[in-house]
Length: 523
Image (cartoon, rainbow, N blue to C red; front, side, top):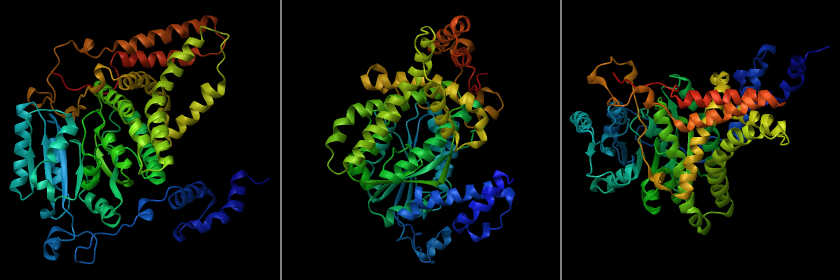
């Protein structure tokens, strides 16, 4: 009797080889699975989610030497009139550990020197850091880079306020496009050569977004878990939004905007803590299209301390909910977008992904399941408690196969964070006191590798004892409740829920005591 592998090889491979490049047709029975994967990728990129270059016209900028990229000497000889003027904005706030990397990467972009302006928007409150950033800018200016160091006397509007203030300078009027890089982002030199052509040949495009690549993804389990979630966000959520509706949320960095699109949308607005999403929605309602290009990657740093990650997630959950509250009627009344796009923005983009997902995850796994243990007459079907969540988990992890063994940790940690995200969502919807709380995500750069000396401290040591500083009472309280429900299930239950409950309670306790992520140097 033939094996299943032989059946696949003899019956199906001949039907699909027409999709495979000639260089891949030397098949053997041992590499059928690999070739099937190749076929799937070809079909996906050709029919299911075509690459942006196949949907929009893209041609290298003609530099007078036959097109394509060229070095600076070639550009100077051929002239630079075909290159649009680009503004590069780098907003900063006390970024002692990463300011050199970000400024250096921006100044290293391979674009004609007379067609690019680097604008460092420094909101730092630490005078030492401000001096260091200014010295770094002056160093690059001495090397012939057109770099501007800009400060303001307040932090009104936070990042949105800084970006808006940066637009007020006279030299910006000559710029056609603006690209934004947060202080820990490091674009490759050819970043502009890959993104700007989309705008030149497609006047309806207002934004080109690149993908993030994480330099510290393997630093600890928490950063690896973040990588799983963010890879799914970029590969699925962003790519689907770009391909299906030409709309997705700008990620706040590693993207290029057409300045005309920003101006038509009303400019930057600091009314919420997600100024990037706010601008995205307003620009989309004006009819501008967005393109996400997954092949362009920009290196960045994931928050590796739990405190920094917690603040970031509060902002990322509170801000969208508050923006939805403010923009719901504006989306409904918009006349430049189709009904289907309105439904996508309201239902899929906001309600499902930014509001319902957080609340349902926390309510179901941390409240309903533990509480049902106390009421035996309530039965939760296996398809709802096990099968569907398992399928969703596997789909989320498919883009990060190297971390597939961490799925259990991912599930438990994401469920813990669902409580924090749900709280942020409710704060945003009700617009309570913490709705505009903005804490800049702490970056450590290579601080953990440095010698521990007072001169190298990225952050001043806390006066609180280390243990008390990292205790989180909400997580401990929730862990205690779930643990008690698990004990009750061991004694009286029949569904074996206690296995999950004890694991989830342990995750809450570990998180509540701060034994998650790395710890910043404090001595």
